[in-house]
Image 1 (cartoon, rainbow, N blue to C red):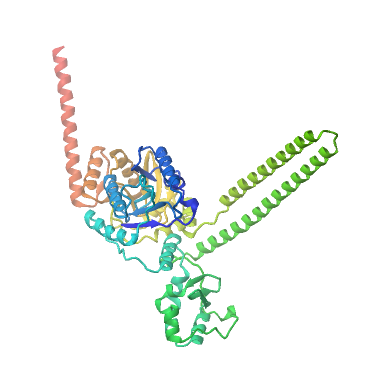
Image 2 (image 1 turned 60 degrees about the vertical axis):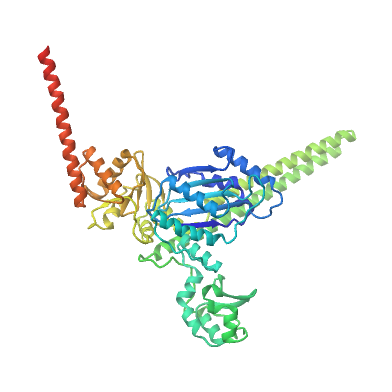
Length: 546
């Protein structure tokens, strides 16, 4: 599992109510929010708890730092714990961080392959009204993660904290966007040659051939690409820190070549998707073109909106000036004119407020329509529209094996069976709710939510028998009648029981599970025969008595 405290860098994001509103928003998904839990408040009602927490934060006027702690607990794909265990884990983390008696609201999200819990904590103590900021929180969190992984049998994750913040941020950005960063590109393309230089001019030449330049900034060096993107040199490698470089090459010397010609680049950094087994060049070119068009249209529309706003304001000013001149020319008393001037001024202020309000609404609407989309977000958007190639790229990002409960085709089959349904419109024509950044499609089949990652149908814990029937029917349409069932032993046996109980024409590739299914089918057939015999016996007895 992974535990992380999300840094909050703005007052707006620190707003407790706004954070909870975002966390509890279902976003048109049937299974995004699976639990909301309130702790250490007088009421378990979410609205009442929010008011209480905000009032507590308002009482403390001395604290200048952020008053909200946003902790996220995320589990690896396929690892799903019941809510009782999640609540116990939440209490342990809050206790370790010193927030055991603090007010908090936790929200469990189940809309992705990775079950995760958001914990919004009020840093202001409800009784002492003092703020608590835990020290060395990352060490405490990492140690507790290791203990919980061992106790609950979870997959062990490397919890060593990356000391360099820039490297940590870069890793997070690459994971979230799917686009290679400048830092990773330099490590892959130029770091070896950079390390082999023995003087400043050779270093400048090597950097120049890669479209890079080294500059002094603050107390260190930065490497700047030809497109203006920069990265701290020591983040690429510790040997490139200012101390290590000056010790190896001497005092810093500027490059003798003040201007760089683009024709001299043998290599240069261009943001591209992370290396993938599929060719994404065509899709990425289209993505860049669409984003460029969107930016151009948005800029044009914003210019038109500003011009229209300024024109309306100027007209309002002219009308206000005309009113003042009319008032000035009329014959009336001083107090009467003063009242008329006040009324005209109030009308002018109201008109200006309406114009600015309309402009802000139109601006936000335009911003939403022409918002910039990340590479992975764009792929998910395209996949939802039915682009099978975009869906395949997302699914190629999957790393490792899924360990949760699942229904799939027999093991000898490949992805072509699952993907053919998407191409034929089987998923496209269904009620698709969302598509994750690793290509898991969530859609509706009757009243049941189906999670399809291309290779299998993912089944959540505690799924009802009625929902299992719907899932098996979808699996039969996708994979045929011969299925592979993997997961916990309880889940496998439950699937066999559902198949036998509903007389579904399904067989299993696992011999033991198939034998169990056949045994259950015989028992159900015998029970039905006995039931029919009893009914016939009762009918004949009734006839003889008559």
